[in-house]
Image 1 (cartoon, rainbow, N blue to C red):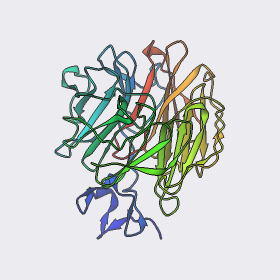
Image 2 (image 1 turned 120 degrees about the horizontal axis):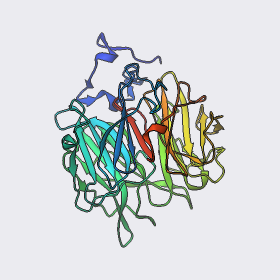
Image 3 (image 1 turned 180 degrees about the vertical axis):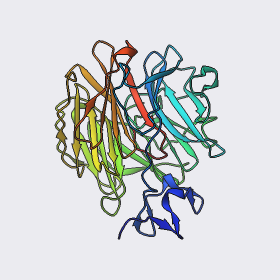
Image 4 (image 1 turned 90 degrees about the horizontal axis):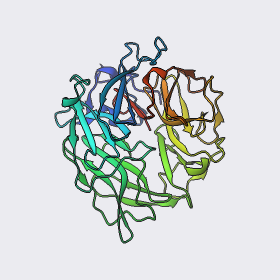
Length: 382
């Protein structure tokens, strides 16, 4: 069945909701693929160490190397924390909002309206969550979907119960711990949470276990497990097979995929990463149409199906001392960010998910890039 371009004679780019559900939450409509059109990002935000947040506002939705800072500008410096997660979503009035998630015990999150001056540090509102979850590398660890926000991170254990998730149902203004006895595992850390559609969510918690929610409130464990490895990141393609395909990266360079929503054990994919931790994995649709995975030690790989990955040859000066930390896409361009052994940063972009361009960001100095997202609802990020 061909992709949908109009519904009731309305162009897909002009549709905001279908039956009350945000268009960014819909993958199929009446059996046909629906992507809501391809929208180029006009703003990319990068979370970094030392409490810094950066932005790129290229009008064409792409990065360029027109300056030593890689077309990045510093927005704010909150000091004393690292922003491992950044996401774009909606507030309680359905207005666009940015949220960043830190590893600071007092300032768990900051949010700001996307229409405000992002360089005004006083407009970034801090949220101190009771029993909050400190952000961790990997992801997406912060995600919006259909009126709800979820975040995972370093949590607490009560017996066998692992409380590593928090949520917001009022646009990210206030948050609370997801306190369920269903999260069982051997690790007090959550790395990724993913919005599928409507109120359907997935999250790998503990060591190789998978959980899902169909109402954005209660969660249950799926049958499949990955023994001995923690899932640091995962992506999803709704158009692969009847139930879509999940692909996830773990510690020690492993990649797995699942075609049954984790009902059975995920299958090992071919990974070129050796023992380098896989920190980001997305499916970039649109003109890219590739799975993209990133890892420590200067490694990026791509795949058409997500079952076998091939290393990309990266441009100079990217090498083993450059550690990829996050990747995002607006489905027309992919951007990967990272750090170096010396505490500096790196930034690359690709229009096809295979060939990458190095963008100098040396002028930004001694700061590590840890997260990235763009201002397109539902766009993939890690």
